[in-house]
Length: 294
Image 1 (cartoon, rainbow, N blue to C red):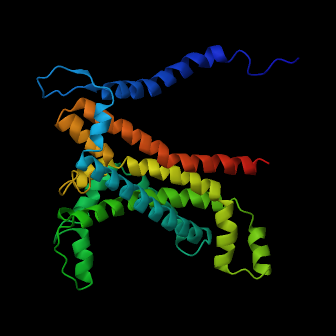
Image 2: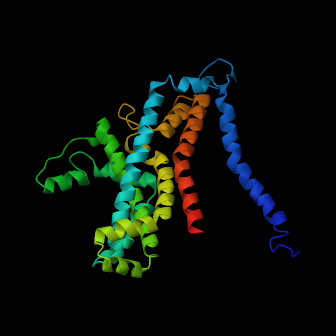
Image 3: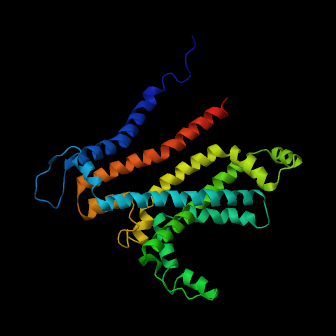
């Protein structure tokens, strides 16, 4: 029986692997434990074990329920737009039309800008009467002086636009890389069979890059849930908490109201939502990889 070439490596990588596991699991375990206690730094009442009481309080908290709705809005709308627009841009870039080379470089810029800076850029862009949006609408003969960040619907729309602006280049570049792995002979065969340009991409390109699309979707969901810096800079969760997702609501409870246990409870619930949203896509990726390996 031949010795495995990897035999003897565990003593070398074991300590590092164990350290990484501790770093990953310790904060989660600590947060779950805190959520089972009553810890409020502004209260004179002693801390104590309350079990699942904090979790039961979540569903009686109308602001928490609203933050869940906002969270799903900030997941579904931006991610769908990023995937659709990113796929369209990737297909256009693949055609190598005149001027598309510089577009590849330009697409990288929003993706590498820090989220807080992106939020500041959009805040300056929508300044009433003086921002870039006011200038553009002015050139079109429109006088837009509405403060978009002071109305609930428009404030959420600005955050969605900022999220799409930041995430779409990442999606487009990854999908472009996947599209360029498809053999051009397959497109030529499709054209010979009478397939139109749209049919070639719908029935050939999209199925071929589906595993990449699923992976990108998971990445964008995670990034959509981590939109905290943009919200902090743009709206601060307002107006009237209309742009407060779960993670921002946890921040407000933990760092402004000092309700440590309740904030931990919100974070645990946020983690469960994250797992529930990503699970179908991870299962799809695993199935696609298994099918491709056959």
